[in-house]
Figure (cartoon, rainbow, N blue to C red):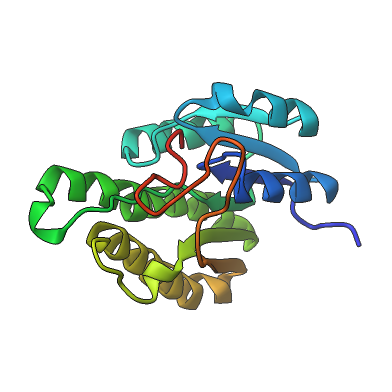
Amino acid sequence: MKSTYKHALIIGAGPGLSASLARLFHANGLRVSLVARKPSGLSDLAEEIQATTYSCNAGRRDDVVRLFAELDGRQAPDVLVYNPSLAIRMPFVQLGPARVESAMQVNAMGAFYAAQEAAKRMLPYNHGAILFTGASAGVKGYPESATFAMGKFALRGLAQSLARELHPQGIHIGHMVVDGLIRSADRPGYMGEPNNPDS
């Protein structure tokens, strides 16, 4: 069956889940745009699926607004995948505000920025999909993982709210809970590492 979607934008692209999604979108005929803070690491994947790469710090609103403005000149995405994640494993009493704010910017505020920019472009057509990659930390908090839980709980709340508001207007909202790190060649992985340090 031919997809009704045309262009998938993956923010926080890397070698794990997002790469698998990128290949799936490509196989179903979608144009794919891959976004990371350091997109040079995406060159092999981009070549494999004829994707375009972009640089963006998802935790900075100006970067996200600039990204979508750049895409407007080509083809606005009708699928958004928000995949960036920053986990900081540390005892609660040792956490400094700067670390907490950094994690919240990536895990929660960046999702808000990207979803809002995408929704503005999807609503005139009553068509689109906004997908968030969550974590089990968005369902229950774990020891020494307060910042990650805070961000992922906020992400889940955002997704639930958008689903109730935007679904009646033709925008599909998905929140995928990934229970654990996805291993890859460059990430043997444990919770103390960022899920995607280059996103």
